[in-house]
Structure formats: C-alpha cells, structure tokens
Image 1 (cartoon, rainbow, N blue to C red):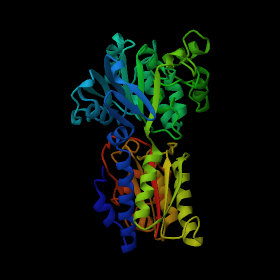
Image 2 (image 1 turned 90 degrees about the horizontal axis):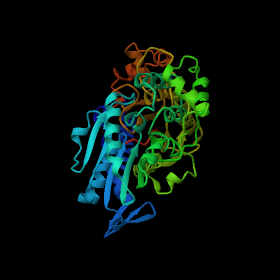
Image 3 (image 1 turned 90 degrees about the vertical axis):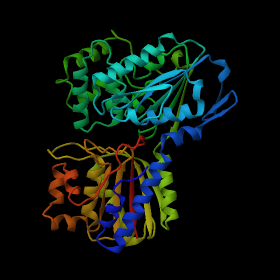
Image 4 (image 1 turned 135 degrees about the vertical axis):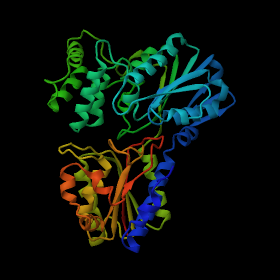
Length: 458
C-alpha cells in the first residue's frame, strides 16, 4: 500500500532539508500501512498444517467440523476473507462479508460473497446484507466452524436494527453523536443497544457453532466489545450506559422516538440486555486480534531507525481533541530542537491512536488534517515536520487520508492569502491543505488500525 501523491508531497518541501524530511515521512507511513495489510495479518497468525489449524496460540482440529463458513464486516474484512480463501481454499463452504460500497468488485473471492454497504452511516443495503448473513447461519450446528472477519467500520456496515428501531432514526442519532465529538466507545455503547447483532448478539445467533473471530483492531487499547461494536464479544456496557452517553452530549431529550423507546424499554427490563462476560453462549467463541495500531506503529519506528533517525514510539493510545494533540506534537518538536529531549536530532517520534474533532464551524476536514493544521502553527520556522494519517485512507468526510505540515507550511499558506488560524477555527483543514498540495492521498487502503502520526526533526 502506498501514498499516491508521494512525489508531489516530497517536492512541496520548500528547502532541501524539508524535502528530505517529507520523503522520509512518506517512507515511514508506507511502512506502517504495509504492516497493517489484512492479508499479511491473517497469514502471520493463521497456520494450517494438515488437519491442524493454529490461530493466535490456539489450535483447532478441522476434521471435527463438517462445514466452514466465513462471515463478517468492516473496511478490512474483504481482504481478510481473501487471505482465508488463500489458506483454506475449498474447505470453505461459503460466506458473506460486508465491505464499503465500491470495493466489493475488486476483491478476488470465490467461495465468500462480498456485499457493499454505506459507511460511516448505515443504509438499507447494509441491513439487507446482514439479513443474508443471518440466513446463512440458520442451519449451523455443532459441526460448523464459523470464521468471523471483523474490522473497523463494521459498526456501520453490519447494521441490523433491533426490533422497533427505525433505520433513518438510527442514522440520525449516529450522526449527532459523531458531530458532538463522542468517542468510539461511547458511540458504540449506544449502537450496541439499538442493534440485533452487535454487543455479542451475532455470537448468540450463531449458536451452537464454534466461532473464531479474527479481528483487525481500530480502537485504542483493543477492547473486544468496542471494535465493530463487538458482534462476537461479551458486552461490558448496558442500556443505562447508552442513555448516559446521550445525556452527556445533550442528545437524550431530542433523541428520535424509536431510539428513545428502545432504550427506555431496556432500562425497564422489557427487552434483553446484551450478553455479558460469563454468558454460556461464549463457551465456543474465540476472539483473536490479528493486527492493531501497535503493529503499524512498530513497523513505522523500525523504518525510521533504518533511515538514520533516533526513534521513539511515544504511544499507541493517543486520544483527545485533534487540535490539542497537534499543538502537543509541535511542542515535542520544539523541545527536541531546544534541549535534545526526549531524543537528540535526527529524531523520529511515532504516535498512534485516534483523536476526535468537536465540530464548531462549517468547514471540511478530518481529525488527522486538523491535527496537522494545529501543529503547523507551532512548527513555523523549524526544520521539523508532523504528518498524520488514517490507516484506512479516509479522514473524515473527505477524499484524503491526512496531511503533512512542516516549518514552512504557515508561510506558504500566508503567501496564498490563506489564514491558518481562521481555517482551524472553522474546522476547515481540508481547504487549508488542498491549495498547498499537502493532503495525504491513498484512497481506501483495505485496512484500518486507527491513525499514525510521525514527528521528524533533522
């Protein structure tokens, strides 16, 4: 996987030093993408020898199963299904995976059907696709092995509203929570309690089959019940938690009628809670994380060190407002130049996680672009760089994956009559970086392990 506009990004460096920093940053980010490749992740954790299948330290004897099915959803699920077909071939009887609309035709699948649906907001095609998946599960038994491929984006793609919940109203509350800056665990606490398959309920519908979920994590800390809203994992949240999230963001009173009715029924105990830890339905379920942000960040660090930088993996759990984190990354670059801490130049700091944006203005952008814009203010005049990108290739409602900012970004923008602070206040990072040619463009990458940021000082 590569950055499509890598050469242009490199040449946008206004000095020889900055062009070199940009070229190195591109190599480092591409190394992170390569490490997070879904097929590579599956093949490195999934070993077949004769009848023995080893998965993440666990072993299955395939002759114990009469049927093998593949199900799942998410931005990486199609590529994960390709890897399974490559390893198991005709041992797979069939399956259904749900992927972002538009990429299903590019997948090379023979036994598993890929169906397209909408992301980040659910649609009727996603509901129909889940219906087809559930139909496949109607005749499973104890001799059925289900391989579930789960990745980020699965919450929207695998949509199947609980009884009485209107799809359009589900879209509405999802949109409002996102615009309010809700964290993914908060958003998914609500989603799980409005769904018939999330929060462990898909595992319940697949009983009594054996389920092995292969998970590409896009959530900080890899909580199994939050990744894609945990369709095969015990749920740690409750109806009360879901209501509290809506109240926290001032959305409870204005919640759509079907959403409110469902959650109130849950509070009264009139509808079942999501399955919790210890529930017997999970006795035959194995959840395995095959790749995560640490996988990508570690590869980025290794590449940076091979390019001659002193490297540090700062954290893979960075969260918070994108503009605050961007300012922090610029401050780290300033500290390196001023004192040589935490590393003497040339230095590369790698960080991962997922920030949020509280939308206050009418502009266009994504969390990684806003982070880079905020960092540009603190980088002015420095031989330093901050680049941040979404590993799925989609940063907010834009066609960019992220952006690059360096010590000349603000000066170049001002020469074009572009005010960085005004664009930051309007949440308009996309239209700040586009005229500069400093948007990172990858297109959909087929993977999703959160965001990767690189701070370089030479």
